[in-house]
Image (cartoon, rainbow, N blue to C red):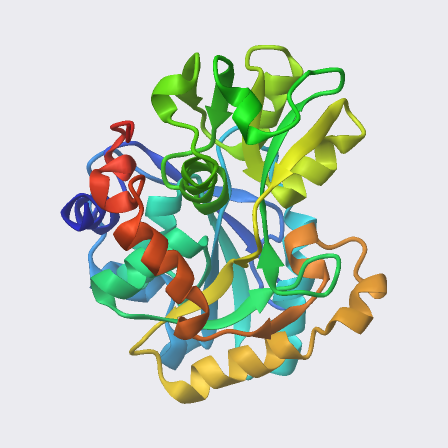
Length: 324
């Protein structure tokens, strides 16, 4: 599986990737969204990536976010964080968006970005591949640095527990997803529900696509992250199973980034505490509640699931082959 991830991350193709630059007002560039396309099969070497983001010459730090295809990018929701980091560190910050989790890891590996906000599985892969360090992890609406995998179904559905899924159709998120794939499958295993007992199982591009498909009646149920489940609660979906807490997604840097830089970024992020969330209502929900310190030890439980679960990622789930 790691060889497959390395092949995907060293090259920002085979599919075209669009990176969206959302600039801070302190940058002289046009602050509007400007697509940056890497053509198919074009490899970006380290020297070229360094020219895009140079700490020594320009004091510019790129922060990469994974943004699923099909969702509208609202750059203004990320810009306040870039402004905050620019105001509280010696550097200027700019956000980049990748359409796939693997490509986000790749941007960190080839130094197209110095900082990445990535899922837990992506962090574990990045650490295994080239060395990565988690700086902070996001707080949820309760002020806790955790997330949950949530199984949802339409209002009026007879489904009340995971055991009820036998004989029904289920939608999961991307093969690369922590909450809507890895943890969702782990919860099915813990409940004693085999994949073969489901009527059908299908992976969709992202959690929003899963929730929309369930709401439209294409599937009896779906697994999504808790933030998406909250969005759809008033649209006709209800949760019928919530996983135990999972450590939330971290902001990650390369292990070889100078500690003076990573420390400045971490300290600036930790200034955003839970108490100030009421003043950040125009921020993205995964950023507005603030951050808590993160360490590699926080993610050991997920490593153990990957290494020991019958549905673990070592069984090729990320190459597009369903793990049965």
